[in-house]
Image (tube, rainbow, N blue to C red; front, side, top):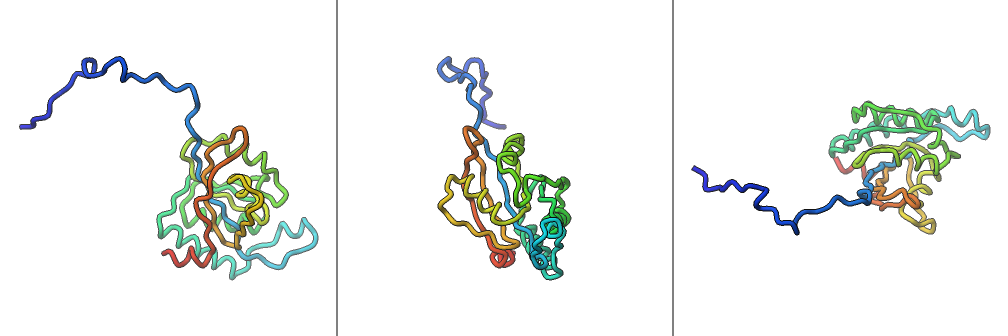
Length: 192
């Protein structure tokens, strides 16, 4: 027989312990994993042709190895968004398949010349505790990480197949957050 006593909440709650609901919004917490596409063929001078560059066979194999390592360490995400450029799309498809991510969408905002302001507006619509992967290009991705963490002086470098994680904590008055980690492909594959 238990010695636990049942307490009537009405009697146990004093008027001073009752909290009124906060009128301010709860802090934002969205984890954004930033993945640079894998190794692609030689850069082309014509923009339309460059957008069609696929991953090389080596780039495809390396991305599979990287993403399998991420799966082995338990990485879990809800959605993946990618630049529509072929090399980024192929990288996102590999990640979605191996990590079993049900949602994969192309976002124009993730193109090398995409609008970061429009990207932040889209991210601001996500619910609390969302975890998403954004697949794109340099120098756009490292510039975006710098903006989120509030510095443009810091030079971040995201290697092909590299992965960064930022936690966005606010979208108002501007996007802000913290850099959680930045990993090279070599580090990722050694983790598993």
